[in-house]
Length: 265
Image (cartoon, rainbow, N blue to C red):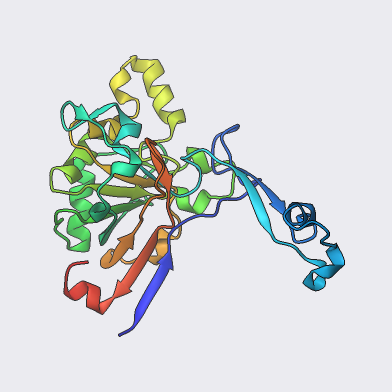
């Protein structure tokens, strides 16, 4: 039976503005020639010409934040508590059953940058695609941010999910969500303007903070969501297991498989 994969992760790479200044990954590439001294220390008397084509190994030194690249946020990232006062789960404690489930895509590309999505927007989009949410489905949000990736505009692009819209999903049993934007919430530049006008701190990171009421995870910096249909696929997004961490990197993939659609994962 045919199985098809669509990569919905972005690269970890140098010199691409995928994060605010000072927060980007830094990757040093060590090629097969540069690494000869590292290999030779294990084998006294080894000469470079003894190696096939004079090559040792290729390896990379990477300096990363756990929120660089496509990653899965744990409830601990949002707050120290979840589910109304329980200790928030760190990324190594997240239920892996959440990380491999049927996917649903909400298309909000038409919404303006900085817009805060409300429950009625979610309801309207679900009605448009003819889908009723089921517990544990993974809901990914396609914003305009995906088209801005690779430019300085990326971290300011796209809409964000508001507190009530996030709770709308969580109250229906969703426990893992995702976005192609830098943040699940609206870009900070827009929220900062609203806060300056109102001094209302509840506007800050409001979608994330829904996790204090109902614990959940979300994917950030997804990519290629425009290649997905509204539903009819699975999402696999198992995080790297980092002890006590707020997030873990993931190679998020959409999987199309008739056998999967016929039963549970």
